[in-house]
Length: 322
Ligand code: 8YV
Image (cartoon, rainbow, N blue to C red; front, side, top):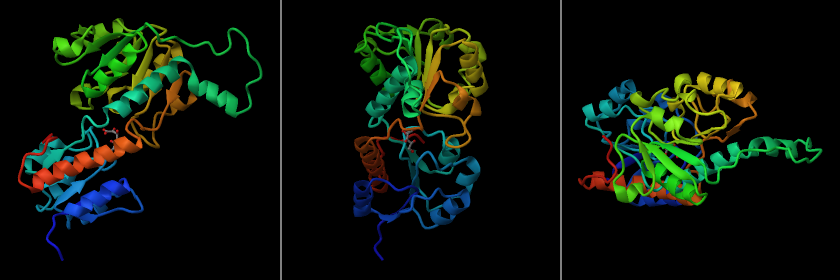
């Protein structure tokens, strides 16, 4: 028996990541990639010095309270940490880290894909071709909305939001944003700061959501706020489903309060999402694949490993969030 620290890896990670992790740690892997129940997670954690989970494993205060004292760290394979009660972890002296930066490009690509897919009715068109229902062409066939030169609102101008803004400038879009604080002038460039969500929503043609899920952002996009957007506007979400009030968004898409939406994240994902979404044509849906590229998934794994190495070397991990 070697005396390497033991890391419980809750999901199957890229082989190269698992191999690298194994060079420094004893790994408890999940080769079948089964989704563990909380009870299984706690059982396995009894043998672990640290846990490397995905957002699919939940760590509410009651689970954290039951973690064995030997668990020193939760090194997430994700940038979002809404699945972990950070206060409960901090109170118990458990270090929590995430994997920022490395997934910004991949997630921004998906935001742009959702914007274009929603604007140009890509889901509808794809369904038409696949189902052999495409029978005709006419000048008013599948006319969508153009995004070139339009106003893009970024809600949460952090790392991902800034990359989305950069990509959208390639479409000559004018960037507006709301953030807790305005960016410094070098980062902001020609983008326009709004000091309230309301002012942003009133001023844009496309809204892309990039704020983290937390108490203060829960249900932020509700009926009252959606009513501030115009009838041709498009809403895109690659952050977390919790930021949106689903009933309100379904109603806004049905009534024409807004024109279209593109979503990669949902309340109740994967299998209990709002049924109204599946019935609407003016929505483009993806299954939470913002960071799902080979290079990004590897980079996320290496970033989580770097955090674990720092922790077990007694150093401060680069991406500590609690
Ligand atoms: C990941 C994400 O796929 O990192 C995040 O916060 O939402 C996704 O990009 C997922 O969380 C992996 O655990």
